[in-house]
Length: 263
Image (cartoon, rainbow, N blue to C red; front, side, top):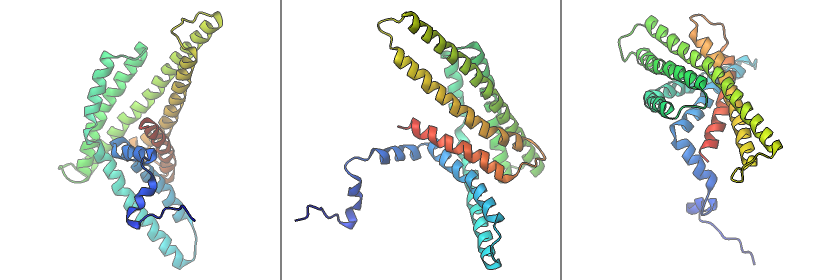
């Protein structure tokens, strides 16, 4: 006799079990602005690569028309996705102001890092309003000429580029501090100078995790750098497919970090 329990089609969700941590985590991920933004970022940039691939194919004429139509439909989808991502950042100045206040009361380990982060924050203080004005002008919500709108967009990206360059300096300072902490810890372990309440294995694990996080941040930053330079120039020959490659690379790592943080 079979012990198999039949499930009504109307109760198919029961197959997920009484508890489903992966589903719970996915809901938390997509319910956050950060999680949604990173998924949309993935669509925005990888669609450029897909469109490039479709447009490079040379099928028979009848199929070619369908392929080009598909490429256009993907572009039609990606355009409002990109637009919506800008709209999602409407409140960006508020968490930025909160963070600016936080680092003044809880400064990073080094004075250099504090100065760099202050500069980065002020880059963003200028970047966000310029991006908002660009978006409003591009949609003809406010009376700004196309030439002025494009100039505002370029200047917003220039401040984003400045932030990205400063991030390399911040990561270099963080790496220097991390290396010093690791050297000091290994020296103390070797000398047997470890207090009873200390856990050197846990300390080394934290250093390793911080180093991994720092490496991922550097990779994301490297994905952003060419894009910020490209959009900061009035005339750029940077191909759209490479915008997709660098942005898509950064989007994968951004999804990874956002998914990890919502565990």
